[in-house]
Image 1 (cartoon, one colour):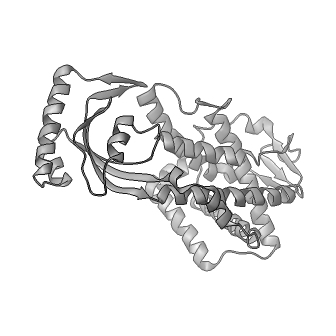
Image 2 (image 1 turned 135 degrees about the horizontal axis):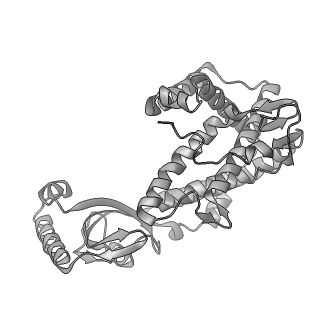
Image 3 (image 1 turned 180 degrees about the horizontal axis):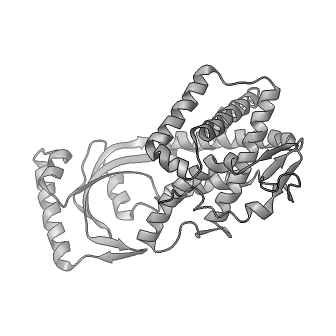
Length: 343
């Protein structure tokens, strides 16, 4: 969950980098949010992006309130709340795709019939997962969804067009990233908790519960040594839980005891019972030299280089537009509740 939050935060932060517009109110259309040259963008032009961000954010809000006791939307990240970051990112994203799709049209870049069909499928998936009535209640129609998704697809296609001639020295990137630093250990485990998370504090279970957990995990280890597999053991012991845990050495999210025991294992070996503050574990090493994280880091660096190049181009494109934001209207909107379905 925390990794998910970090990923979303980075995504929102990256979009706010584009949110550098001239402040002011639209004189012709006071209910418009943004004017780009002579085109006005209204709330319906923002609804899909707001819905996308709010859906994820409200799911995180439920988790934060239940398990941590405070609000995700009010969570402070480097001086700004997630609500503020989300709102800035939505504004930047809508404007960016309006500019990119406009430039694509001017350059003769269009969506193919296959691409349009794929966008239609995305709309159907959204309607199927949410229900058309719920979407209509918050003002999101099929046409609004399709218009927004088509615009994003066209903008992404034009972004790829802009990057066509950009060459990245992947060999140099790989040379600068040490494989050993990103060596990943891929494990699965059986475990029995001996503590529970109450808000943001770890609370140990009673001594009787811990003793019972130890007796059970000891029996599990004996059965495992007799050749029983994880699946059959899970069916045999109701208190037993299963998880996959992949990590790089020194990962702060994985207990030190778990890492130390894992580092001793060869592929397909099992650990003895180990104890951490969270519970008792039996670890199975699936791959002790995975390059998956290394490849992800390489791709992250490639994406960063592409983003840097694209940002320089986009800044020039944006300067071709007279952008005015109706802050009197925009500031009144509260992210987190705009596309919440009404009962």
